[in-house]
Length: 261
Image 1 (cartoon, rainbow, N blue to C red):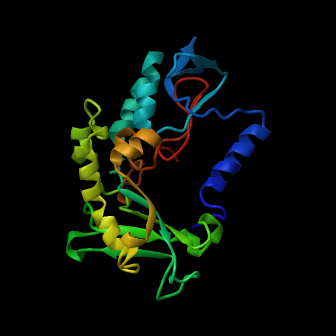
Image 2: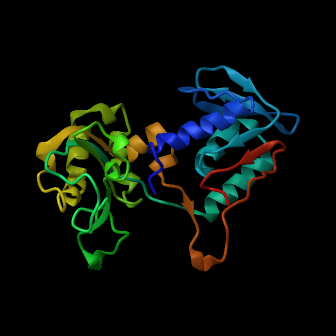
């Protein structure tokens, strides 16, 4: 569950693979539209107005974001296909996250039954694990890989597993209100459930904090470019169906990622 060096090591490996095969990784270069020419994908337009020409385009975005980016192609077959896929699947809810760095003085340096590297905190069994802010998952990855934290510190990640409704945060999505004091207050109140989950094993965690980074569905959407901050698409196992494949009706345009199978 914890690659040595943290999840950044996975990103670094992907970058090495891209560059090894002649590719280039661009940061802060979000795609604004898929470009098509003569019934085939021809590249992408970036948010700054520049374009990147390509013989093949692969979207790793979720299906709803891909539908929006593909709209400028005007390709009826592709857009109808994506509309059908959006209607066929269900959008998972979003997240509350809390990333914390703490002073580890007096805390174990290795995991044990009394001080595990991972735990789950469920407030109310009757509400179920899918109820908003009811189940919290916590991990102290530095117990497994000390390189993830400075000496004398631990890193902690607590989150609700795709159970936070985006609708509860839409009020802050207008007029830059995600930068308002009201939004910060709502965020702090929301992540209290995450703090309480951590306190089950580290009761004085709040007094140990060196850095704390809370996040909401708006954060998830902004930095991960996820439609409504969603965890992704899903189909009930009982349906017997599968998520969409990788090819699409637009030549040279493919999809990958968690909306596909």
